[in-house]
Image (tube, rainbow, N blue to C red; front, side, top):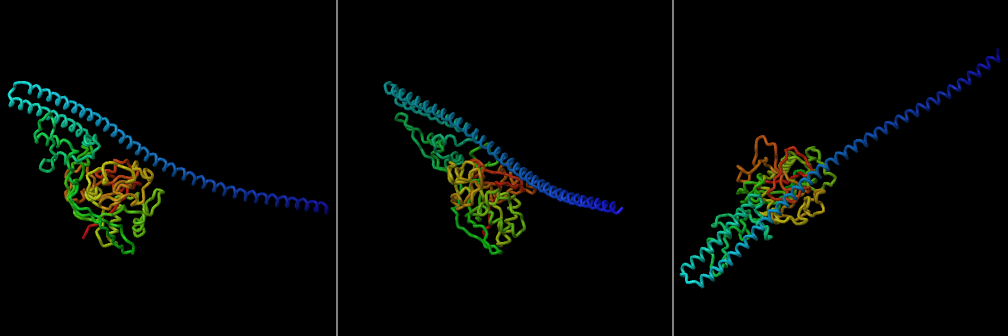
Amino acid sequence: MREQLKARELHDSAGLAELNSLREEFDSLQRSDENYREALADAERERQRLREQVEEQRGEAQRLERALNISREELEKVEERRRSQVEQRQQLEAQVEALQNQLTGLHDNQDTFATDLRGSAMDPGVRGAARRNSLLAAVIAAVGTFLAAEAISLMRGNGELITGMAGERWVDSEAVFAPVAERQVVRRQLDLGAATVSPTATEHLAALDPMKQPALPVSSGPVSGTTLRDPLRNGASGPVMVKILGGKFNMGQNRNQLVTDERPQHRVEIAGFALGKFEVTFDEYLLFARATGREMPSDQGWGRGQRPVVDVSWKDATAYTLWLSAQTGRSYRLPTEAEWEYAAGGGEASFFWWGYALGENRASCFDCGSRWDGVSTAPVGSFPANPHALHDTAGNVLEWVADCYHENYQGAPLDGSAWQERDCTQRVARGGAYNKPGDSLHTTRRFHFQPNSRLPILGFRVARDLE
């Protein structure tokens, strides 16, 4: 019995040891399971993070693809316009060559006719009348051909083609076809034999040649440039402003009849005001965002500092001007569309404030020849200032202005004030952008967006009333 009890105790002891061993193994497996679950959870979190990162990169790729498609479409349109203009220019050159051949033939016929007259017994008075009739026919033919060529050019919306053939800069059609009393007509004489064409005929020929006409000044106001900078109540300084002296100018253009929202060209009188020397920068906008608790817009990875603030809506820009007014005690606002065009043009009627050719490294646009072209904005002031001492009015970012968008200038204010509507759904932006083609930088070019639009191409500069 005692041996049986001892054997049972040994058996129970072995069972207990086995049970403890199994319990320890179970605990170990449980710990391993927990570790596995934690590792699995970590892996799931990492997978989710990678998925979000992929989605973000996919969204960025889609945004870049859309931007690329837009740029490609714009380039195709530019190339199509260029081919059309080349074709039209070739047609006009052929017409002018035909005109020259016609005039040469008329000249030869007139010489022959004059020789026959001298060798004949015809009365001198009759010979003179015949010579005048021959000359008059030549002049009428020349005038008719030039009128036909110019009419074709104007109907196609390319009034500058005739002047473009000679490599001369285009002159506004308002100056070309203005009444004789309003311009200085250069009288010319056509040497057809020994005869002189009448002054009236030469005036008509001169009026048809824009290369011979002085351009009307786009602005009658003097050049500006005096700067000012208001202190803020928080101890910082506001944007650098430039005083723009008032004057009159021709707003819009008559060059291209197909661009209806830039027509009709009209005379506007601008009162003196101040305009930001530069586009509002990220540093300047940061003061406003911190003071008002507003979220800073994205810099698209290009950097902030002295780059123009982007991804701001018209409402954001207007809120900034109200804050700036409260900080300085001055009346800040967005410039009106007329004020912007008056100041951006710098008193010039050309496509750009520096002339008619885009050139290189004068602005940031898709094909402007700068190191930022089509890639990103440039720090403000990276390019030369215009005659009003303003930087970046062409390219870099589109700039919000105060006006509501209208499809043309019929009924537009003539006093330089903003053209508003009670329920405005589209606001105007001007000036072109870093990813836009060169022709979008034309001083008269207009863009429009919804007031709450935030895009990497949208920024602004501020205006201030002069007390």
